[in-house]
Length: 145
Image (cartoon, rainbow, N blue to C red; front, side, top):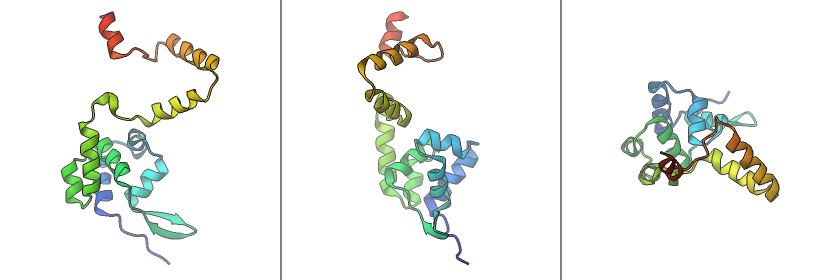
C-alpha cells in the first residue's frame, strides 16, 4: 500500500495558521478564492489520482492568497522555502484594497457580462432594491454623508 506524501513546509505553515486563528478550511478557502477540495489538497500536500497519491505544490499566487487568508506573513513563507509565494504576498499586501481581486466579484462580473443589456440592467436594479447589498461606492458614501 502506498503511503501519503508528507505535506511540504508551507502547507504545514498554512494548516497551523488556520488552526491558530480558529478559521475553518472552508472559510479560509473562500477567502483565498479557491475551492475546499483544492485547499485540502494543498494543505495535505497530495491529491489522489486513480488510487495513487500524487504530491501537490501550490502555485505561488494561490499560496500567497492562502497565506493572506490565514495571516501567514511573507517572512514565514520565505522561511518555509517559498520565496516565490512570499513575493506574491508582498505584492498583494502592497496593492490598495480596491485593486485586490475578489474571485466571487470577478466571477459575477463575468457572468453579468454574458447577459443582454436589458437583463444586466434588471439584475443591477434588483441589487439596488435589496437592502442587504451595498452598491454604493466610497465616493457615493462621502457625498451622502
